[in-house]
Length: 472
Ligand code: BGC
Image 1 (cartoon, helix red, strand yellow):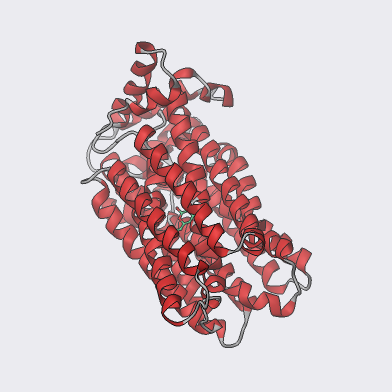
Image 2 (tube, protein in one colour):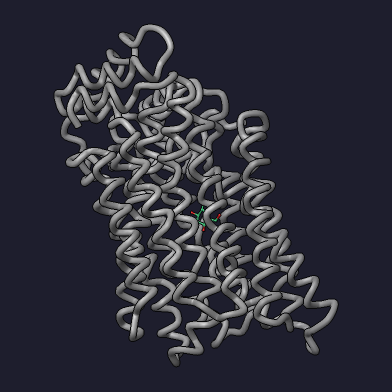
């Protein structure tokens, strides 16, 4: 992009332009959600075409997560080297190729290859979506715009459920998976209207271009913000994995990694990806199961909206504690319901309601709060690499759970599997209560200062340090 291109791209009224840009960038979240959700319905019918053992089922399901871990691992570096726009464009192309490969896959290995390719794009999207939005957003609305990405993730999942429902009668799993090509094209076209991140431009010596983007997207003077960017860029040089292990950063790393893993091992994606399969086992037909799954998707979106409305008022910790507490209870109920003999009728409905409540509790807590906190608790100088590391852990844990879920239910049975998720949720509750800081209403600088001060004041463990960051 030349300076003239940038001036043309940002020609539009400031506020409208920034919302449009953020919405287009949040298509990354939409694709992330759509491509992870669509498999749930497709799975019911892939089995009719290919015969798969539980292990192979797990591999098909988790191929995308393996790809996403890989995509997240290299995505941060690529975004730095090529630019955010470039990576979004590459991601859109990879999304397209992955969806096409899955749609036409003649064999299971090619289907797995398609899931892997698609996964790499999902990994790129999970990093570059929030990264780009937070860099382009004016500071005063950065929180809301960052959460927009998670809202789009849930919306993407919901749309995938509708698409699944629409193709359910025909059992057209190839069309379900192929539909992912459409948002990929929209994203690729939309990127033409999006300017490069001003921060990336500045870092690459294109200061005039950075100023041009800021001037179009901010009201008033941009000198202060440019000066801030300059300081950050100066501090950031030489950021490596070793910098992340500095003692003063450890508490924040523990919190991020802990939440990344707990967000997954408490079972959300066993429900998101396998909901129709679980619901079918409660006695519903395939189409009814997919319809009930649409209900789960709606609840996920609505509760994320509620979380966004509450997050700056009641704080992150309260939402997390209430959300995870609710997950513990609903998982315990699910275990009991599946444990009881003669499972059908009323119990089927109790199971469905419990699944819905479980998702509601996730959506008000661990879903949005995890992604928001990891964009808040790291100092700007190591934010990219810290978020990258934590995101890889999130996808790694996602991979383990989606691979293990069919094996767990086949070997342990459903009741024990849900109880296992319940025990993990209890651990998540204790972890949150003890270690997760409250960041509501605090500036990123204040959070960073707390981290620095804690380590000079005390020789306590990383755990103790973390818990002293302004906990309410
Ligand atoms: C998680 C995903 C999950 C989604 C469900 C996200 O925050 O990272 O793994 O599928 O929420 O809404």
